[in-house]
Image (cartoon, rainbow, N blue to C red):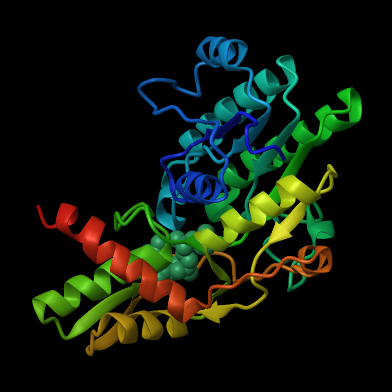
Length: 314
Ligand code: GDP
């Protein structure tokens, strides 16, 4: 990858896109192209075509998506399916039309079947039914993977797809109804501590297990793959370790300094029982994560205190 190559980061304001922007800048990539939603709505096919025809990026990183936690995914299947299909169809097709050199599509670990073998190998894709709470999002992401693979097979495009595990870090969504578990619990623990509450409510049974990766590690893995990986076969990105939601909640309370008790809202869904990626393919290529969970959560809590907490308390 040349440092002067023009790179379009779709979704640069989000958790993943902002981490990629930071990483690429830090690595000396100076020709980054980004657009806010009001400047370019990626659901608008004509606008996306005009943008690509004018900008002609050499590389595209697809980090734009409608994302959310278990409740948002479960409540808004139409939006999760339609917005994601529109965004990815427009960007991937336009990238082909202007002959970009390479495209990285970011999928998700929820594309794998609900009862996939653990840790989940890449070969588990499309081998069984999906988890119902995020089926719409997963179907959209699977369509994106297949579109990239089809462009590779039919037109020889270098369109690669990576499957990140659950991510967290700066610029995450801390809205309690639409966020994922880690930012939600970080905020809940912080607010409970500030209010002097004695209890903190956690959704579900606490038994599901999830793998969490700091988004700065994900960004580093993506840059590694852009430089070293040229196959249409999907590749998992994770750290290879998981933790139960109960243990995660306890760890977050410890880091935040909330000393009350956990209570469980079992009317809320547990979702998939376990989601741990098999990352041997990535490890064999020579990439490993560097940020441990405790350190990553502590860093994210510092970010939250400086950036999100003041906004929330307004
Ligand atoms: P998932 O990985 O797609 O299931 O998405 P989430 O990150 O939203 O949820 C992961 C697990 O954490 C599920 O079992 C949730 O029920 C559980 N959980 C516990 N408390 C919370 C919370 O406050 N918010 C969210 N989003 N999930 C929670």
